[in-house]
Length: 284
Image (cartoon, rainbow, N blue to C red; front, side):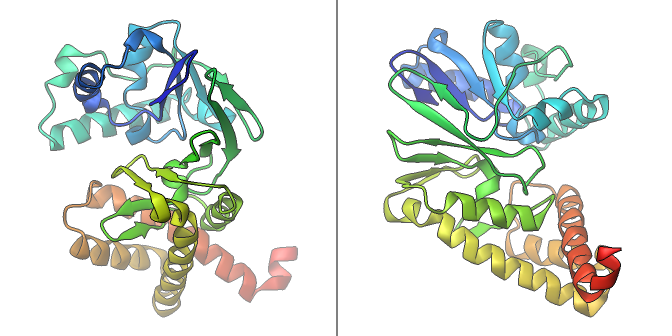
């Protein structure tokens, strides 16, 4: 949540079943819901847009911002079905199914908003939110930076802080993910505000993106090493997921979803490796 002297804005849309918790937090922290006039979607995955339908229907004048690619995705019937199915599945796993009986949470194609892109800014009065296009985690990923607070909202496009590490999340295009991290590394950051597992402040916040860059390189090297041994995308993805789940049994994402994520990641890296090994083919 960003509170300017003119408007307030929710940054990112979280999981659908969190709506009751969020309303309780508004009350606990004295946040005036009527001052919330804007909501910024950083990418269109189900676990980052879940609260949007509820708040848009509750406040029809709420202005919702996302990348043009995100709005394209959020109008696709298949994507809407996936978002709703995964969101309900996550609520069931967390024992929160009842929230769907008291809140209107399902996405529909009537939810629209404003497209933002590189160089745009969102004015909250005394706070300026600058937009950066940071694809790689997804094709629609953007990041937001508030210079007055030295706060960076990179969502999963900046890597996911988890325990003592940062999970490299170049899901759709690992190369673009690494390029996006490089774009963000020179920002003056005091607070790295993640969508999952909280925020990082002080020296750790300042160094978060540099650390994420380092760990992304290590993860890519591991994927390349396993793929060179197996020569198979499916086998490589399964090995990575098995190892990850063994080390992190309490991670938020179900193994079957993780396997799809890793398969996509490995496919991109494998294709790059194949192109480099056959330079004449890649130019034809």
